[in-house]
Length: 531
Image 1 (cartoon, rainbow, N blue to C red):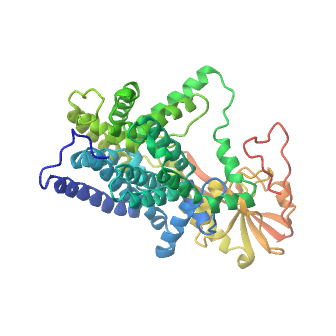
Image 2 (cartoon, rainbow, N blue to C red):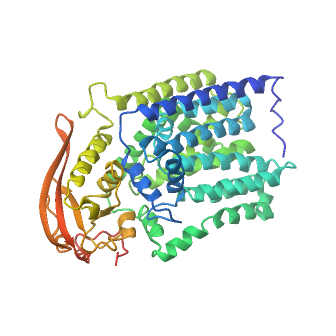
C-alpha cells in the first residue's frame, strides 16, 4: 500500500518544523505536569489509593481489572517511595507518550502539520488534563491503544518492514489487554475495517492478522489462569457492567442525555461538537470514504455509536468511550484540513480547529486550576471536595493507632467501604495492611479476594466505623472484647467533614463467617461467595 495519490511529500524541512513544534509542546506539558503533580493540593482519588494497595500484593490478576496498573505503580513507588507523586508518575509518563503517538498517527495519515494539530487538540481537553495526573486504568489503556493504532496502520502499509510493525502491534495490544478489558475490542474493530476495505480484505486470510490477534490474546493467559483459581471473579464483575436494568423510556433517555452531556465536559464543547459532526457525516458517507477515513472511523464513530446505544439500556460511565477519541480527533483534523477523502469540506475548517483548541485549552486550564479552590475549598462549589481531607484523616488515625496499648500486635479493620479502606492504608503514616469487613458474603472488592487476617490469633485490632455506627455483631464476635477508643473528625468545609469512630478489638479469635443476605437485599451482580 502507498499513501493516497492526493498526498504530497512535505516541503524540505517542513516535517522537521512540525515535529520540533510538537516535541516542544509535549516536553513543555510534561515538565508542567511533573511540577503540578508535586504541588496539587488534592489527595489520591479512591481508585488511585485502591490500585496502590494492589501494587503491594502483585499478582497476575485482580478482582475487577487486569494487573498492569498495579505493576506500573509498584515499579514507580519502588524507585521513589510510596508517595502520591510516585503513584501518579506513571500517568504523567503514559499521557506524554500518548500525545507523541497521536502526533505520529496524524502525521503518518495526513502529514506532519495534521499530526501536530491532532496532538494539540487532544492535549487541549479536560479529559487529557485529568489523564496526565490520575493514575487509573485509563492511563495505560489509552497509551497502548494509540500505540496499537499507529503500529497497525504501519503494518497495513505493506512495506518491507511490516513484520517489525506486526510484532510491535502484537506487543502493544497484549500490554493493552493487560491494562483494561476494553482493549480486547480492538480486534473486532480492526476486523470491521478489514471487512469493509476492499484493499485490505485479503488480510483476513493471511497469517499476519491472525498472528497478531492470537499473539495479543496470549497475553491474557496468566490472567485467565489467575481467574480460574478465583472463580472467574473478574469475568463476573465485567459482565455485571452490561446487566441492564428494567427502567421506563424516560429514564433511559435521561441516562443517555447525561452520558452525552458528560462527553462535552470531558472533551470540551467545541471539540465534542466537531467530533460528533465528523462522526455523523462519516457514517452517512461510509461507502464514499477513502481507506484512511474508514480506518479511523472504525475506531471512533462506529464504536461510539455502540456505546451510545448501550447508554439507552444502562448507565454508562463518562470514561468508557475514551479510547475512541484518538482516531476521531485525527479524522477531525483531516476533515478540517480538507484531506479526508469522501467527506465534504468543512467551511472555515482551520478556523474551527483553532477555536476548538482555544476553547479546549481554556477548559483544560480550568481543570488544572479548580483543585486549588481559591476560597471554595470544601464548599458545594468545590469540584474536588471528595478528594480532600483523606491525608489528614490518615495522619490522625495513624496517631491514634500508635497510642494503642499493643500497637506492634494490632491490625486495622475498616467496616465502611473500600474507599476509606484504601485511603487509610495509604495515608496512615504506618501504611499498614488494612482489612475490609464486608459482612454480606459477596465478593465486592479486592479486599474480599485477599480474605481475612491470617496468623493474627491473640492480636488486637483498630476497628474503623462511621461516626454513627458500631462494629457489627458478627465482627464483635471475632474478639474477646470490643471497646470504644475515639472519634476522629477532619473538617473539609463549612458543613462537611470526615468523621469516623475508632474501636479497639481485644484478643482476636477467628474471622467470623459473614451472614448471607436476604433475597430482598442480595446483590445480583456479585454472585460469588467469599467462603
